[in-house]
Length: 339
Image (cartoon, rainbow, N blue to C red):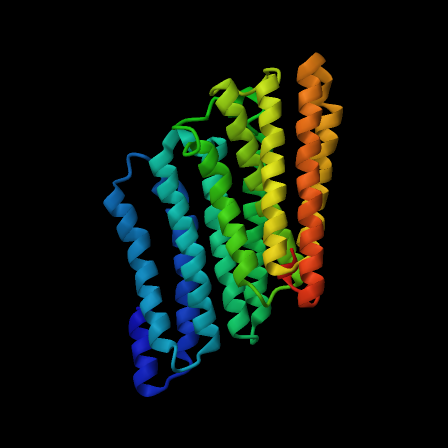
């Protein structure tokens, strides 16, 4: 009926049919969410074909109606259809995840996948907000609502059910580096990184927050993978071994050096300062934590190696500064590029 109304409007220019389309979308929302809605679609004994017919087909038809109305500029009907497509699409994907994961949907990585779907839907709303400022507050409000749900879901999955707890650690499955830790942390981190890169119309602070959270998730992924390498799947409740401690130091040093090279390539003073801050934190960790367990010649050799590394980094910093001065200093632009 929505598609027929869109076709009639396009053929006879009957703008009032947009009100019918909005009412029909509201009826579909009730059917999608409540009656029979999510409880029916999430049941394992509900045939998958019924779920596909009840969700995928209406979403596809609403997309067709949106394409039909695109040239007519029916703002209310188009906005209603567009919001429904993305929102109901996210609900549909969550239902499929629920059915596929079954008992694993309440694990840290299952909740992280659900939060990733909500993040993607939020990003779609915020991206569409850029293309039209008319009724932009509706898109922004819907995007904010989806972002709020995504934040709650990710917080429960990655903080409340963290891998440092025994309940969370038991959910680690798969080979090293390509396990459920990667699913739980790298997927939402990648989505947030793309949002920080693509949503250029958002505030610099919002995009910086996206990039910062993505970085924290990536760092957590590396840390948990290092711990799993040394401790196995049971990473909760065990003491940190000496080899694990050094692995963290090496990872921090490599990340800081990589950031320093990126800062040199982009001539970014902000990235250079972040790299130096990372190196300073690494040095503090070495002196305050790593060296405390060493004695004799091993401790002297470790200090000597650290001194050589610091000398190399100091030389690299001086070389970068001299190169910038010869080529002219390029100030960081007030955008996310500086972060």
